[in-house]
Image 1 (cartoon, rainbow, N blue to C red):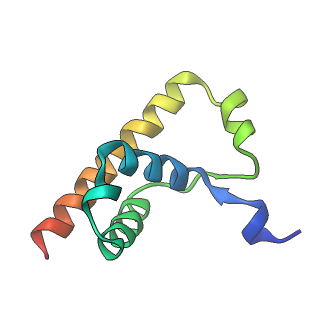
Image 2: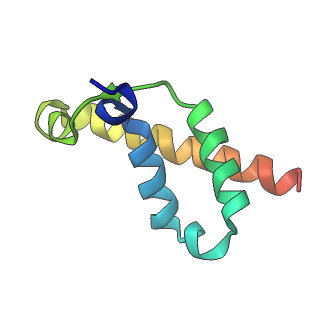
Length: 86
């Protein structure tokens, strides 16, 4: 088992999806996006999984909604920090 291939933090996917949803991947450079991801993920609790399908089938809708809201807040806070400290 290779841990770096077999497990990952589910919040990484949610964070990247939200950044794309906001269009930031088209507006900002790679350095900004890398910093944005790091800051955002450091504001979120880890949620390690092995398979995406586990989250799709076993995560209650209420928890999924809560996770999305946490991601939105974390990305907004990270953007504000980066924009104010540029």
